[in-house]
Length: 447
Picture 1 (cartoon, rainbow, N blue to C red):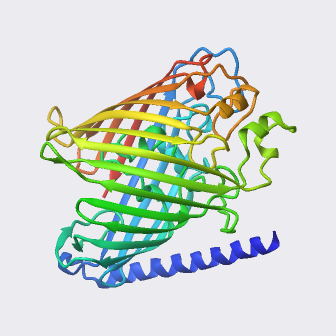
Picture 2: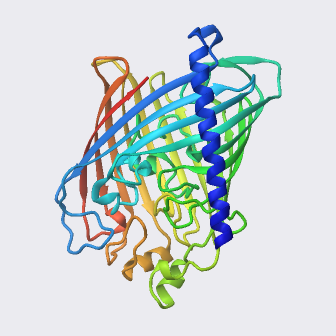
């Protein structure tokens, strides 16, 4: 135990030194670049997002420690991120993202497995708290001489990029930046807000309570096919803030293949992903049937969780796109990082460039169906709690959610206001509670 703590402290010192050095390097790049786009070898972007949500007073004959409260005041989350990237060489980029996050989700982000506010995944403390969200190196190894121009974006410097290449990223990052992407449903800051829509619900991807981890990602990129694989650290505790640096006992692997077929003169995306987590997870059946009762008493030995996700998105016309996801994990051992969903199916559509008020407006509608394994059901029915759900009892039913949003660009090109409505049937898989009507308002700005 002492050696593990010493190792963790040493790794943190390395990360801190790397982060400070990268930040100073980027500051010097900005100071001495002269501001010319033709010679620009850095990028700086910023975003700020705040989401306020509230729900109706819904019927519920009982309430547990992880239940959505029947009546509560509106809840607000806030995140602000600086995206800084600088070229260290022709094919190497350093990325550094300081972030401030705070606020809370409804009922402390508990009581609904497909939680309505995706930004609360980045909030570990109600008080606005600064943190280092990302600090990693990205290197490209060209595999072809033919190139195309890639525009500047968040954490990306404008440059000529080979059509085929290998890419390697290492450091503190968000696996969601690399895996389970979706053109129309992946960013709760600009698209759908529900957790089961921003990512595949049953994909328990490696992350601390704020959504970040230490990882190594390798990618093979071509115009029609992509493949990536990654290994990452898991938190010491389920949904915990501290990562476990003892890789021999706690680790995560995921791999994904992306196919890009041409359908009706449009390029579709088909993603097939598999993941495997290994940590000191409790087993639902053991935590239910073997005294003492509860997950916290059965985490002594390492166990695994495996699953897959299949995602699809395609432009249906010039301004309308459709998408769907299917995800599954074995559900034998407890959820460790993301949310308490063992099976999930989602589908929806997005309408871009709506001409009513602004041609940059967009709207979306999606449906979600979430489920859990038999062992997971028995544990909750016996009065057990996970880190997100637990009503003290359970009359099981599929958690079904519909989300509708309209994102309106106002006043300037950098500000969006988004009213959002979500209808939740059987919150936390419980037929005895709900339905719940969630009304939300999102303000988002970026430069």
